[in-house]
Image 1: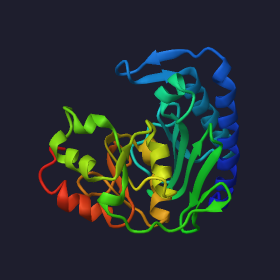
Image 2 (image 1 turned 180 degrees about the vertical axis):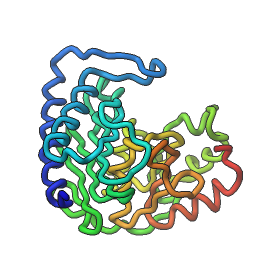
Image 3 (image 1 turned 180 degrees about the horizontal axis):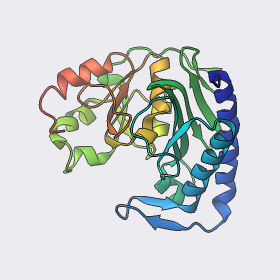
Length: 267
């Protein structure tokens, strides 16, 4: 059985190589396809990077399974054994339109327990990584334990969709949070927003709709530095079907649930 250290070493090498391929693609014409709607796009690079990881993992760890956004891995119905959960480009719209603010996200889970988490900010060349219980890092810099926070002194990352009319949550629930927070941001990449919470760059991140590959790597970073992780109901995340997500510095979970999400969210 492969050791966590061995998997971590290979994963870092593959993340860097995949990032180099993405940066090299900036001067080439992308093949862009629509998936479920005009805002849900996939490119030849999304598919190519996922295939790259599938090929590498298959060569080195043939008994491991892969749960990837573009469906090139295995048909995952459970998290038994070792499962690599991969988003080849988290923030595809940013990749297409801006060539920045996108990431590669990777989580390695063994019998449902997260062991390795990585988020690679490709353009900034910053690799956030964690082995469970051994500290979280940005490159070689260890990330400190997160301090407690309060809403009125916090920067909260939230998409404007959730405070305007939408099909998932009553916008009036979170509008007061936006009003009371020190400021709000939206980066368009869940993986980066998770990494930024872990690094203390933002204080909380809230969203109503993600898939496991969006958060599998990043939530391990947040948990390792003492942050709080749940869905919008305060329950554990669903790593097979996706979920809403709320991550924060210590103290913010209780304040947000007590003040803003104490009623029926409709989810």
